[in-house]
Each structure stands twice: as structure tokens, then as C-alpha cells.
Length: 96
Image (tube, rainbow, N blue to C red):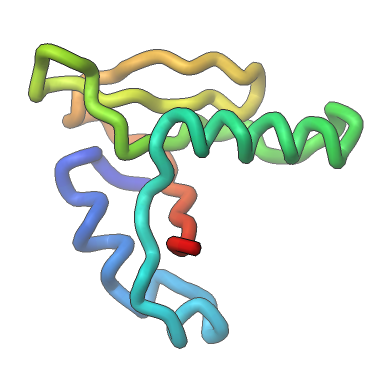
């Protein structure tokens, strides 16, 4: 978990990844569209019976402001914005 403003330093720190994940340096935060695709994929693959109940930051900022960014709630699929000082979970992905 982290505030939006310190996400990059957390994602870049290899100690925050599994041993396999530490082999890679291209980790990044998904944008709000990618995060929604991940949510829908998990929902479909588990038949709606998944164990992910956190809200996750996306890399997408709210247009017209530097104070808020988009997140996705994995308990219900809601996408909304929070101020960047709020602490939420992180779900980093690798570029491909």
C-alpha cells in the first residue's frame, strides 16, 4: 500500500517483488483501462468468487487536476478517484 505520489519508488524497489519478479526492471502501474481489464479477467476466471477485495491505484490522473488519480475497487469493480495522499494498494504490471 502507498500514496499515489510515492508509488514509483515502491515499484522500482526490487525488495518489494518476489524472487522471480526481482529479475525484471520494467514494472509499472497499470492505467485505469488496464486495471479494469485485469479486474474483469479475474472476475471471469473465478466466476465472481475471487479473494481480491482491495482498491488499487492506477497510473491515470484525473483530467484537469494534479491532486487526484483513478483507482479500481476489486470488491465491486467501481472505478473512481481519490486524492493522491490517500493510501491504497498497488498492483504493478510489467510492460509487454
